[in-house]
Image (cartoon, rainbow, N blue to C red; front, side, top):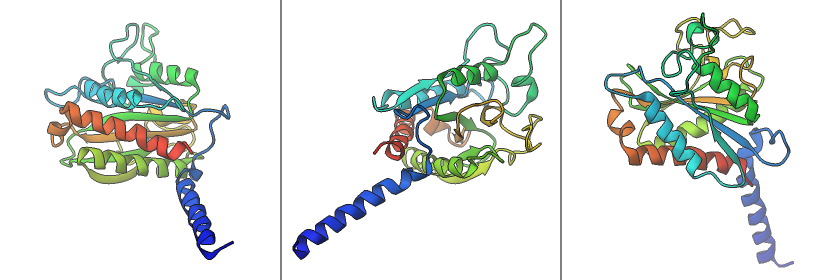
Length: 248
C-alpha cells in the first residue's frame, strides 16, 4: 500500500469518526428503526402585547415538520382551539392550575392533552417551542428537566439546537438552563421537589429526550418573531440540525 493511499484511508477514517462523534450522545430509536420526533408549539395566546405566541411557535414547528426527512417520523401536538379542555389557548407550563389540574367539569388542561397525545406517539425526542417575555434579551434559551436520568444528553442536544436557532434567526446564544431556574409558579417534580416545567417532567412525559426552547423575546425580538421568513429559517434549522445529529 502506497503512502498516498494509506494517507487517504486514514483521512477518510478520521472524517467518518468526526462525523459520528456528535450523535454518539443520543440513545438509539426505541423501535430500533426510525427516530420519532414530536414538536409541541406553545398554545399560549395570552403572552405579550399584541402578540400571539401560539401562532409564532406553531409557524416554527410547521417549518420544522415541513423539511423532515422520510428517514425520521415527525409529529406535532397542539391544543390550540381544541374543545373540551381547560387552558387550551393560555396558561403557564409551571403552574399546577394550568397543567396537571382537572377542573370542576372534569376537563384536563391543554398541556395535559398535548403530553397525552405525545405519549401515544411514543417519541424518542420531544421538543417544546416557546417565546420568552420581559427579558430584554434578543436571544434563545434552552431548558431541560433537572434530575432526569438523561439530563446530560438533554443539555447537549439543547445546546446544539440553541446554536442552530441563533445562527438562523440572528439571536444571541443564551445557553442551556435547568427548568427550576425561572423560579416561578408552583408545579414541582415529584422526584426532586424542585419547581419544574410540566411538559418536561419525566413523571408526565414518556419521551426519553426532552428539550424546551425559548426562542426570542416577545418584545425585544418582535421584528424577528413576526417575520415569516425568519420563522421558516428557524424551524428548518432546528429540524436539519436534529437530522444531522440523528442520521448517519
